[in-house]
Image (tube, rainbow, N blue to C red; front, top):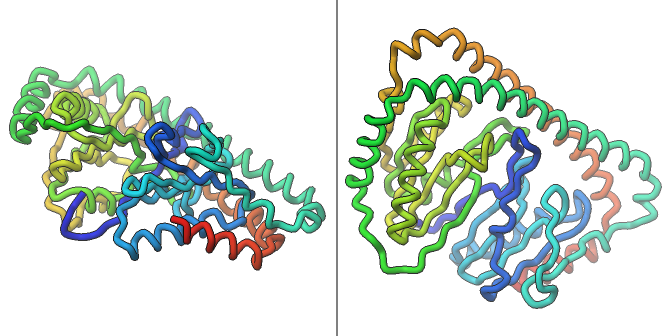
Length: 365
């Protein structure tokens, strides 16, 4: 991380994918290494995100390094705050990322903010709460279905593009690129973190470019519409960095988190590598203060073969963008319904008691 300015990197630990919600929440803390995690329970509107924002604000004022974890279903809300410096984390432990203590009272504890709601008021709204909750689940399920169709169209292009790659030239490039980076072997016990730096959200498919800018003095932007060649390059970098004992932050693609790497950061040397594909806003990663270098992957694709399949590729791209937009729209609908549900819970909270406990917890960090 840059040393000249204090910054708070932001990531996602969960992503909406073609195979339902994908969680990296096991990355929150290490219960076997003196970490302590506060697990927040309670319905929407019970103050979980507000509490975490207060803790982040406190850490920022004290210049204590930490990470903010945003919610993929509402990027304006927080899912967690992770502080490696104090070995503390606090997280929203409710669905879809349900978290329970590993060593209760020793490495983690549950904080039930739901105890401050007025149960009688909620009971009066029982049917509405149940109806809204079901509608939210239905919208999320629809979003996943659209992403699944997106994934199918994208996989067709993936098969086509893979057959056109000049792998000999690509391998030569990777070798030269690694040599250019001069990743000398480090004598340290390195750590590898996994985070999402992008996600499909109600605000669209977004990449947290501010984080990429904060983490790096030098950022390599790999332009690859299909995340194929970029994945090969990034996998090559990861293998070399791992064997050379570099700390790494590896960011999978939300479209295929088990198989595709989207971004990699090497904090020891303040260098990062981010994939820019066709589904991101064209201005993303274009006007950063950090020094950037573009790697265009088209030079590794046979132009004649691409031209032969252009119509099919363009059709699949059109389908991908259509169903990605439909997925976002379904998430947007879920968010609006969730806001209605949150209003019911918020109006049922005993804030005089809640504010005291929030203040007490925040003070303890």
